[in-house]
Image (cartoon, rainbow, N blue to C red; front, side):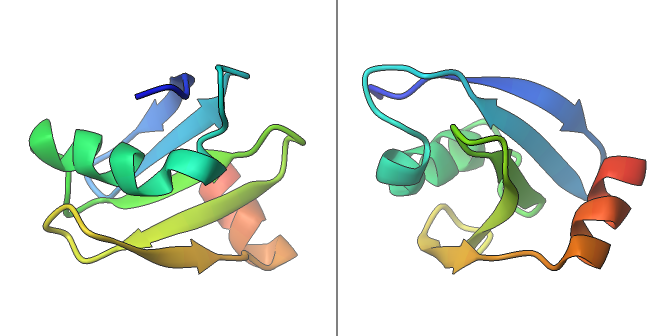
Length: 84
């Protein structure tokens, strides 16, 4: 993987990571990031990420390592994730 990130929060139901300005962004390698966490046995959790601009959104996946797309969070959803 050419992107780098740090884990911000881990719970039973979610992971939150922050893009760490690697050679490329988490956004550009979302499929590999999802696969990485699935390989670690964390695939069923929701996966949220702070992009390089600091915006919190979600990487949607099928729980089996396949990236499905990006979900833009509402301000309310962002607040809920950050409050956990």
